[in-house]
Image (cartoon, rainbow, N blue to C red; front, side, top):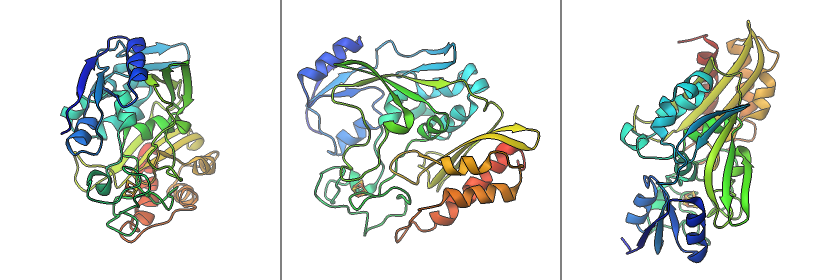
Length: 328
Ligand code: SF4
C-alpha cells in the first residue's frame, strides 16, 4: 500500500479546511471500503482525514421526519427503535447488507459513498474507465454477470452496491452536506449519478463537501414494507437484484406505493412509473405483475447478466406480495 499521512478532525470546519488545503486527501470514516481500495492500489490518497469522531452520530426525530447523522453506524440505525417503528424499510435494507461486523463499523455517510464492486474496477491490471478514465471498460465484453441492466453507458455498466441506499431512495431521503460554500441539501434521487461520459464520478458531491446527515420525511410506510435481496449466498454478498417495496393500503386498495431496485443500475433505481401503476389498484398478484412489466421498460441485458431481465420483475412481484401480506 502506498504510504499516506493521517490526521484527525473533530469538527466539520477543520475537516473541510484540511481537505481544501490538500486536494489529494480523502475523508476516512469507517473505512470498510476505502481501506480495501487502498490496499489494492485502486485509490491512493496522500493523506487521510479521519472524520470518525465528528459529532454526527445521533438519530433525532424532527417535526416532519427524522435526521440521521452521517457518522451513525449502520447497525445503530438498523436497531434504532424509532427507525424500526416508522421507517422499517430502512432497517430491513441495512440488515440485508454486508455482515454484522461491517455494519458495526460502517457509517451512513460512508455507505452512501461506497464504490462499485465491479471486478475490473478492483483489478488494476484491467481496463476500467471508472478507475482510469479513458482506459476502456473490461466488463462490457467481459464477465458481466453482476452488472447493470438500466441506465448504462458505452463507458461503464457497473452497479451501485449499497442496500441502505435503495431504501433511502424509496423513502425520498435528502442528503445534507457541508462544504466550503456552506450547507447544501441534495434530494436523494440527485445524489448518485448514472455513468454517462464520466463513470469516474459516482455522485454529485462537489469538491470539499462533507456529508453531515440524511433526513427522511414522515412516512405512511410503517407496516406494508419489504426489502427483498436476491444474492448468491444468504449473507455477506452483494445483490444480484434487490427490491425495496412499500405500500400504503386502504383495505385492499393501494393508496400509494414506493419501489426502488438495487443491483440493476449505477445508482439506486427508483421505479416511479411502476409506483404510479399501483396507485388505486387492488392488491393482487396480477396488479403487481403489471407494475413489474412497467418497471422493466428500457432494460437491456449483456452476455452474462440477461437472467436479470427475468429475475428483476419476479423480484418486484415477490417483494410486493410480501409487503402486502399476500405471501409470507
Ligand atoms: Fe470499470 Fe464500470 Fe467497466 Fe466495471 S463496468 S470495468 S467499473 S468502467
